[in-house]
Amino acid sequence: MRASSDHSAIWRVPAIGGVDAFRATVERFAYARHSHDCYAFGPVDTGAMRFWYRGAEHVVPAGGVITLNPGEVHDGHSASEAACRYRMLYVERATIDEMFTVDAPHIRDVVAINGPELRDAELMRAFGRFHRLVDQDRNAAASPIEQQTELFQVLHLLFARHGAPALHWPQIHVERDFVAQAKEYLAAHLGEQVRLDAVAEAVGLSPYYFLRSFKRTTGMAPHAYLNQLRLDRARLLLRSGEAPAQVAAAVGFVDQSHLTRRFKAAFGVTPGQYARN
Image 1 (spheres, rainbow, N blue to C red):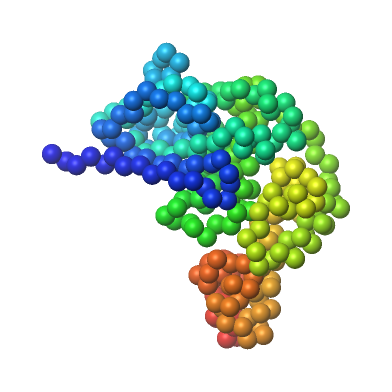
Image 2: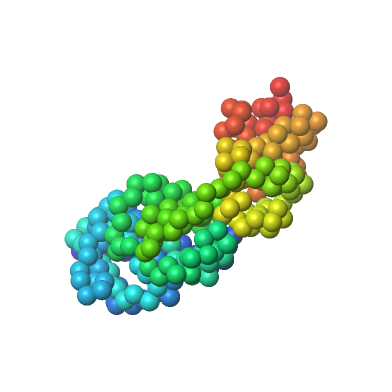
């Protein structure tokens, strides 16, 4: 008899409070009826997931996004004899309030996400980017500011398009003074593990309003701008004779391999090759 492919993993996202990431493959395993005290949502990657929800059976195939509201009872198992592979995020309501309530005070009136199945290709892509960043086995080097930025993108798409009612944020106005202050903050904290909420607090904006202002003004997300600052500083240090490992630590990369990946992606050569030229 062939062994089952059932397996799962869940882990806390350390850079963001109140968020757990989950991935699973279910073939023979079946979840008993249960509920979560948080929002639970994520894509089916292969196969199809069948579950009972609000008194009816639902099947979400590959390419669909499962959405479950806090406190809603459901179960789950593969919809066929083949394995179903899927990913989820579990996000506490307090985390969502903290991220968005300054920009959209009426978020406290949002009690549901439409579903339990969504079809949204852009949301799928945004979810995939975030889940890869925080995957405990594949990308431990992702910075806190990058993780927070990508999560905000996921939650914005989810609640603006599929909230019940849908959320609408006020029209943004370019905040050049705030962005200039943010650039100064990022340059001054180059060697640290910078958090998006810390930068936003330093310039007096909510994290999500700051993120939108910064991207609209510069054309880059804050973590991409910070990455460029670090690479520019790394080039100067390499030219002065600093070893790549020392440079990586000085400019805030996790280790030398992290510096090497970023440096080669930007300039086409490794730090060692650059230093020898």
